[in-house]
Amino acid sequence: MIRVKNTDSDNVDVEIDVSIVMPCLNEAKTIVQCIQEANDFFEHADLCGEVVVADNGSTDDSVSLAKANNAIVVHASEKGYGNACRVGMNAARGKYVFKMDADATYVCADITEFLIKFEDGYDYVIGSRLRGEILSGAMPFSHRYIGNPVMSIMARILCRTGISDICCGLKGFKKTALDGLEFQSHGMVFGPETTIKSRQHGLSIAEVPITYRPDKRDSHTNLRRYRDGFNNVVFILRESFIFRKYQAK
Image 1: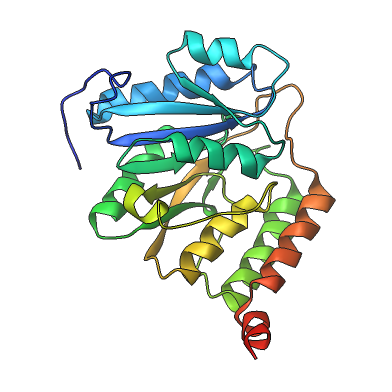
Image 2: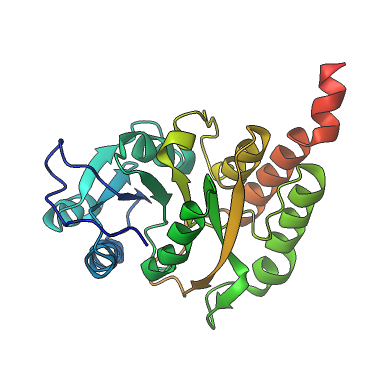
């Protein structure tokens, strides 16, 4: 495990080990918990870290709460989950850049296993809820046994991802590898795009089992189940090696 002296991440000259980027749209219910858990993780792991909250037009207290808890706040002017993720990841300064949803469903302590994979030489590491522990009430039956497995199998076969949970919201990159990628998805398709484009660009990819907790927000997910699921499937088909081979002719 990397161990460095803890320093003030507000100093631009400080070398940041880990950035955790949280796309945010009206997450006042959970944003403080997510930031505090991230900072606790940095302290316990003896890492110099930063939390980057990428706001996407929140109308609640998300931004003020994030700033009050010492997160770096950046603003994505264009609407969409993918836009917020890209803006946040571009602003991240860490040697390792993680994307984690701000809904308190993910456990920061799981990042330890990601860092071990990075030290083993991998460029991109994604969590697997399906191979980890999904707590009671955390994922609807249709997502756990139909939607996520079917899309993940499609991506493994058609895009050769080798990944069991293509839509997992906890993933990390070596900054040097991330800088060579250009993601384009504006919405939830950003989820599968990160893994598929990483594979297409020849990055070494690993996955680790993680814990997935119930969403604690009053409004629950920003996901639009059928529309986003359809868009994900279309993206997987379009990026499949069969379709890309056909286009190349």
